[in-house]
Image (cartoon, rainbow, N blue to C red; front, side, top):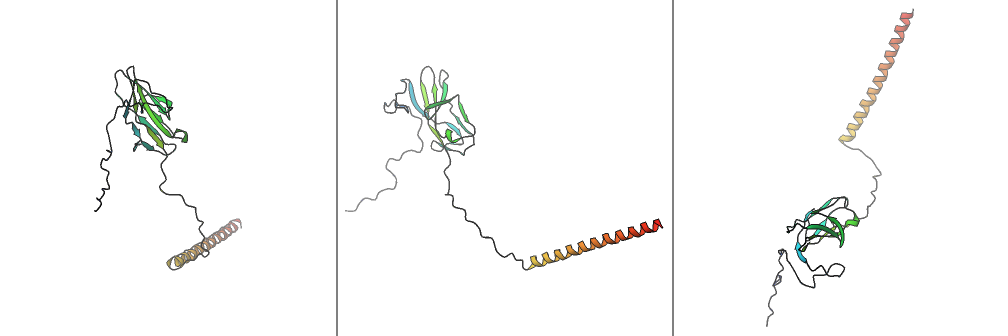
Amino acid sequence: MRAKPQSPLPRNPVPAWSPPTTTTDPMLEKDAAGGDFPANLVLQLMPLKTFPAAIRGVIQSELNYSVILQWVVTMDPEPVLSWTFSGVPCGMGEKLFIRRLSCEQLGTYMCIATNSKKQLVSEPVTISLPKPIMQPTEAEPMEPDPTLSLSGGSAIGLLAAGILGAGALIAGMCFIIIQSLRTDRQRIGICS
């Protein structure tokens, strides 16, 4: 009996995008330290607006560049937005500006919206350095060419320029000598 050919794609593919979800799963209601989230916390993973753009929850940025994180959430009454960096509070408000990104600021950021009725949590975004495209290689010293030579038209042009330059120099010196002799004769003629 022949085996059935297997499809390269899974039977139940995971969608590339899914809408924000709300959960009350007790397994997900643990914070980074392992403690329980407050009872009024709703884990609604809403995406953040970021600059530069986040791809699959990761922002790749060079050091000393700026990064902007923004979370727009609508709640009634108006929420207070607080930002966390690796579980530690790091800012307040709708936007978090990171000016001149440093190594200490690389990590995961989240925003928590809190009002008197409930709390919402944004999707986490991780800021990291870009991955190098290729590995650096050792620099190899270049050997200088032991002979410098000219040939063809460039050699003839250089030779002609040298001869013309020498001729102009000699002509200039002769002109100065002749002029100085003339002025000397004129001075002698005036004095006598």
